[in-house]
Length: 567
Image (tube, rainbow, N blue to C red; front, side, top):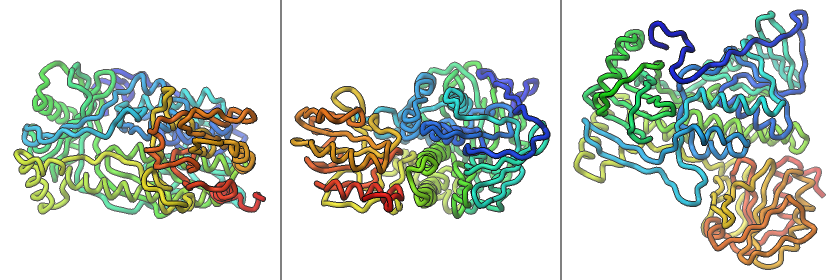
């Protein structure tokens, strides 16, 4: 919603582009494509398109809108998501525009009770969190997609039917020229919580709806308060309720405030009401300067998911598959992980470099991650918006204790997003050896800053990456490549040595050698001869102590569902 007198897309700081519908012959009512059809041009759909494009796979992105989403919407991008954007090669504008942060402050009745810092250190390439309005996220991803020449956009196009076929999916589309059918080998549904694809196939999200509702308001003001997440419990401006305040680029401040039980959403979103409430909140946070109302909306917390994120050749990603509360900034980041996960797997399958079983791993991994998010988000949601009188009494008691007792203050920690472990995934190899530390199979890889100024995860490419710890002879590196490259033509090898051993002369640019003063070994609990196998999405597929080349080759073939092709 916008203030009176301003159009729906009349922003104080962002110029919305207008995208025309596709030009086509209205008589052409049946089309066939070898591209992947992606329904939804939000951040999740765009990351899926860019992931496919990195492997040379074409996609057609269909969206009912004529521009980007209005309002700031999802604004918090986690470190793990910046690694995805970096892997895609699209990160520079994000780093230039976004506001990074590590710290949050919690207040109760106007008094600070907690200041927390998210984990961060010299071995991290990115800060734990960045704030950036969703319009910019979509703009940067859209521009990057156009540069690939592999992504076709069809704006102002509605999906009205989805029909399974033996060798693909037929999508019914309505645009300015009428209705046509588009047959594609695969469809990725990234069309949000009100997914047309999901509805067309008769699927429903299941889970829990919470009572708590929030008005989300974007305000432009020149406040010099640092980029720190603020949570206000029982402030004067919202007695008994909660308020969240985030700084964004362009002097835009995101203010979320809880509605009281019984408040009408229609009344609460009247402009005069929003202005009155925002004014009171600004007084609470000691801002007395000029401000302008940019945009507002209303939001309720839910934990909802599909039972299965796949229906034949239709894959659900992002909010079409799951809806999570905003608390803990898990929604967008979880969706980007979905897109990256299915993107590289589907690309491998389409390229003939993996068998169909690789797609079967998507739901166990990403739905498992969603359920883990639900567990943490439910705790945060119950704390932010207690569902019963009993929960409220316990929450308020903890906050009251936190005023004067340190032990109670961690209860107000919002539990920011942490990567899920794919320990039970079919894409995870059971551990071989007796590692005492380091990331276990199924865990996210540990990043380390290298002596040359780069980072360990910078070496990951389109395929699996092997990390070989070698203090002496690395002659068998050539044998490793000879055996593994036919299984995964994108395979890369990183040799970690304490002695600066050069790679054999017959190895090419598929191999990198890094000198380690001990940091990598310590982080990975590795000794000379040990081997880690990392996936393109930064997860550890397996690790071995002094394995044979055949052990690794057989494991990689199993992961890619190519057992029958390996001698």
